[in-house]
Length: 437
Image 1 (cartoon, helix red, strand yellow):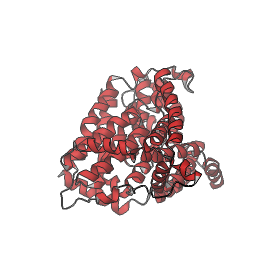
Image 2 (tube, helix red, strand yellow):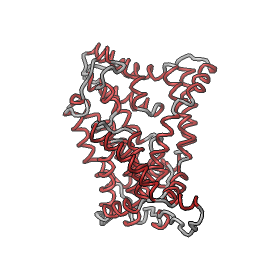
Image 3 (cartoon, helix red, strand yellow):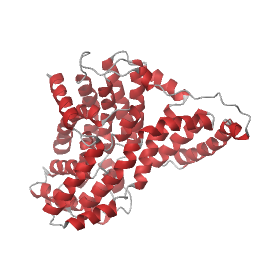
Image 4 (cartoon, helix red, strand yellow):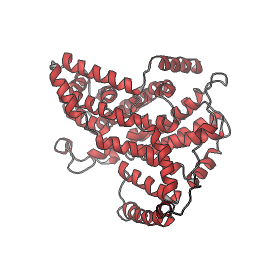
């Protein structure tokens, strides 16, 4: 029965889900029409907001591209390859491979979302080299671990409202993470997902006849050509371990100060920095690392071209008032008891158009905070409802899957049919946790 449902979902997505680039173009048109019709804005106003906001995610786009590149370069070092290979040997069957990659991705994503995306995808590739398993489901399982990120240590909304001086501090004060990330209901949701997500992925495993396998040889990195002579001074520099060690030592000193002395938290920039420094050290020479970079960069085109369109969509949604109107509509028929559920639903819808946790909180917080105060609802729970809604529909929205797909060498339609099943299952579990626990 479960396989039949999964088969239908996979076929539906494979048939109707376009390439992520077409998807973002369609979202742009839908958002623009909604702003014109629903918010009574003129077409030129919408176009102006879209154009002005088009480059609003350049910094973030570069960060995401570096997530892909640095993660790929680190994973292609001999030492990390041996580690991943040793961990992958724990999987002795297709089912155990699916469960193992899901658990690794869940843990990594709970620690930090960028870390989880890269580690999950790289580990999926290593498992595919050693275990004959449906590659689509393996990569989808790696991506499904991303579900828990906003309820974890790097959740942008709970960390924002726990920071002194945040933009809504005058309305709700400072809310410690003990009331959000480490609250009973949030930890219960996380535990439930740690149990359900691997189990659902395992149940979706196709029969051998229906499985799609990948040739392990296609997943191997191209060998580094070391046949060049070292007669030129430039050749000697390119093969110099001393340069790599000097830069690596400086990077390690910074990382020691950041992680140990200052005890600072993980963020996307420091993860990329750490991955890059470790890749420089472990590759040994600049030539080896640059060869790895040549391989890594091939999959980054989708990130470069699509993120500006999402920035334009976000500008339309925010500047036209459309995102706020959607939130207001959902809370208009809520009670104190049902507000977390409807906030979760509205956040899931807004996330399809505004796939950014921090940006989504900026858009929705004025509406949901006012509603929570008027109804006497629990504000920390409402904030987490926005956070979970933002994480939830990532199983439908291919935006965050781009780095994973680039590393794995797949297309969105290959994995999103499996993710759609996780969307429904996780939506039920998160709703129960937010509403009744």
